[in-house]
Image 1 (tube, one colour):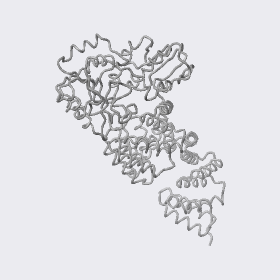
Image 2 (image 1 turned 180 degrees about the horizontal axis):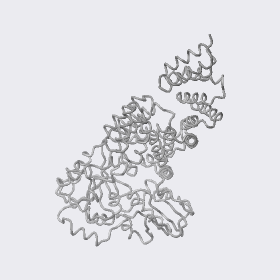
Image 3 (image 1 turned 60 degrees about the horizontal axis):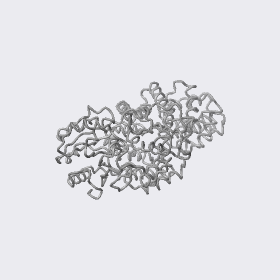
Length: 632
């Protein structure tokens, strides 16, 4: 006997309640019972499809929803549910088509706008996705999930302030949501608020121990506070949860690299590339892994594959530039190096009404504005091009960072030096300093250098330091640590404790560290090193102290550039995979004739570098006369 409509609707209402409680099997059984009596009941067919989808049986659920839509094509909710199910199968274009129909039928369907935003994110149409999420929020102002997902879209666009605002709003609306906790933790990680992020990620994992987002945010927070081994364990969870997703392997590669395990990091990056061979970023990450092992030609091949997939990707272009420059292929490398400007959005991205100079226009009689853009060492290294421009007949104004300004006060009479935020009243051409090598068509064999250096320290200040230092012994300055905020500092700096064998010599050792790293304070007393850090105000003071020394030994930091620019003997301690400017294999630097390079033979081998330098110190009592051939 056919049941009355009211009885069927009551059964459907009960099935909906079961669905809302997560009792999918019970709900599906009740709905299938209705369909046995009425196979064309739209609500029962539609909801039975939803129940199967929620139970993970998409191959059964999607056809049911499609049959329901054939019965009632004007139902917005059914199109929305079909679209969200197709999203789970990564059929993004089909999903978007269904969701477009859902919002066309009912523009007030907030859930459909939200689902549509998720489809657009998958299709990398982030601006459209943000608009769709915004529409959902307008229709349902307390829609926490829409805020959460819009915040993630903002994060993908690197609009971090908007991402933070949305994730904080989402969590305020749903403070018990593991997803909201994890997503806010990820954004806080970008702002380096790692301790807060760690608390949130721990709470997210308590709510859902199998959440990929929670483990990702947890790993990021642990990484940020320096708990790298624990961060590596968190990447194991990422891979366990999503073994076919490349992201977990990429994050594992990053942690392994930071732990000083570049071979293992490369293996993880290769796994990511194999899992997503059509994703350009995975080839780029693999190339970065090869760079850390000095396999530059292979890295260029990986970057080439990435650029076949996405020719205009600025990250890959930038990484490729660094590899080309390190190989000494300057003509191509400097051109590619221009991709740093849109990528880094730093001081090089200055907008002026006058033309940018890239070497085309003759300089004679022109007013040229050259300006700093990166670190102190970069400004010191590339300021030499201001001298070349002046020699070519330009009237040059050079902008430098404030700690360098007094050093450059006596740079050259033909160059006017100004502060970091200043600019000339008028000029004809402008150029960021690190575009100067391109403008001057610098090749490996035409690097401009001066045997006696191109910077100088006032004689009176150098004499002051000479009187304060021991006179009967060689006076050697040491820099073992760079700026801890530098992204590669863990690779280029060396703990003072590993430098202790150097102090066996009878030389007078002088610290050129302005600030003493906290981790080295326990070792400083064992060295007997003279420390004048509290008296060093800026680079002019450092230059004066360097001028009173016989030799400087330094890791790759700005003081090494300063010593080279002053023409002082400088021995540079380099990691296995060095910065591009030091090239490969060479023991000398074409940038600084007074510089000698001591390289790690394998990643992390600072003990080997220290042994090389100790042997070199024993070769001659006068480091001023040590030749390249004398070095071990």
